Amino acid sequence: MPARTRAALASIRRIGCGLAIAAGLLAGSPVHAQESHAPDAALQRLLREAQAAVPGECGKPGIDRLVRILCSGRIRIGVRDHYPLFSTRSGETRQGYEIDIAQAVAGKLGVAVEFARVNAANRIPMIADHKVDLAIATMGHNTLRDGQVRFIRPHYYRSETIVVGPRELGVADWKDIPGRTVCGTVGNGSNTELVSHDARLMLFDDAVSLPDRLDDQSCTLAAQDDSFFASYFTDPRFTGRYSAKFGFAQVPWGMAVNRNGSERLGRALDLMSQIFHRDGVFLASARANRIGTAFLEQQATVWARPECNNDTGTTNPACILPALDATLKPTVFADSVTAFEAWCASRTGIDVMLPMLKTAPAWSLFKDGIVNSLILVTGALVATLVFALGFGVALGSRSRLLRWPVRGLTVTLQSSPIVLTLVIAAAIIHAMFSYSSGVALGAAIVALGLANGSNAGQAISEAVLTLRAERTALPMSGLHLFSRALARSATQIVAFLINAAKGTPIASFIGAPELLSALTDITAFSSGRVSTYALLLIFYTGVVMAVVWLCGRFRSFLERSHAAV
Image 1: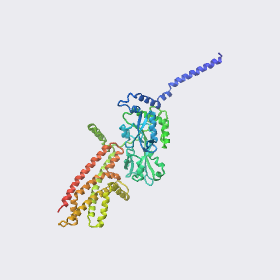
Image 2: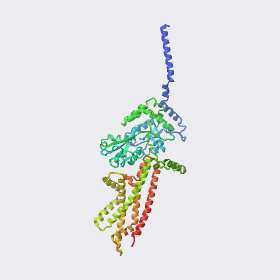
Image 3: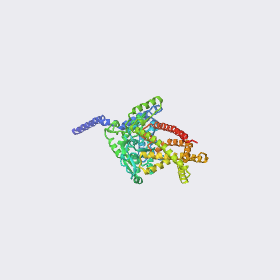
Image 4: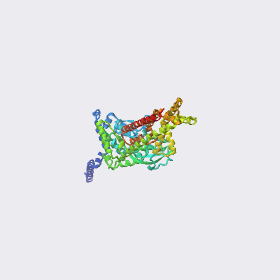
């Protein structure tokens, strides 16, 4: 063999040996180690472990929700029915960014997706009650909700709350908010901030009501995620009438699962979210649905970084976003209230929750609500009595010029629903004075006084007419006649006084800050709705019982003082 050929073969052997050594080194190198720790590999291992339990463990109690999903071949996902660009429904067709995410999740799991309608008020209860396996429902991740559900990280979107109102309305920041009624949705995390700035809340179950309430002027302002209003601000008619006044509370959105029994499912979804960010799945869907992409573009860069693109990325503070800090300042007796709740649960099995006593904003609202309710009840009683005397004098008058116009007003008031009377009284008073809590209370007092006073006044006038018709032998001056009429109609007067006291909670309809309104505001950012409204029932039951007792004494006074023959 020529020397040149032998040299060439030796060179080939050396190259081959070098390649083999390099291949061996590469197999044990950090690159392959990194691939084994990639979120994709971790997700596949987790799914294989869960699939290995199917069907053997499908009938066993206490299995992880991920295994249950694989056993049933479907995942139940809670989504919203009307949140433009994110999740909308037309017949059986659903579309939007969150619908795309739900289908991508189901695709990764290899199961079918079953959608369930949720809203801001019931999405967490439906997770807690195991009615859905996963919620993808525009839910902001804040520290208050961390104890209620298990949020998936990384987050799939981020928004801020904006305050929207008529263009000509002079609202620019928080200093313009106190005393104004702001419409929002039950369960929205931004309600806490609004209440802390002395806004009056009018709450709806679904955000879709808000633009309509702006149009019919039920709401002067509406507060909701900027993502919700994004589609409306593409409508020239809407943008011609309304504008975004200011924004606050940037909050990341998270998918959520039950905190108990969903460890594997939550972990699988964490890994999916990493992959969807890194591979641009979230970003592509956002572009397809015409929603803002700045946050998702930033997140795609984050999750492509080596320190984040691994199976421990969701525990790395440099990669994940913190929840919005929505911690409320506790009251000085919050710990005692919590201990009492625990004692009730252990001794009676009843979950008593008293959120109005545990945080400073809620306690302030609660105290103000009680005070305002007592003012409202007292005012309604006085107004009813004053209007009753006035209507009684006018309707019992011999002058037709006085009697007939007042009779027409009485018939109108008696025929009108109390809510309509409240709205009209509020509209008239608000036209005369700028809105304030005192003005709303005044309007409610006038409306309740008119509605009940007109009925009591008619009873007095009928007693006057009856006494005249009796033609008693005793001479009666006008004052004497009226006194006897009061005595004779005392029972009806008292009945309408009691009715006025019982009707005061309806004043919340026009924004009067009485206890029902205060508790509605409190439950907008706290749990324990059943206990909260049970307390409302106890309060008003006590108030009405006190009014009944006082009215009984008042009736006795009328009968003793004015029933002399």
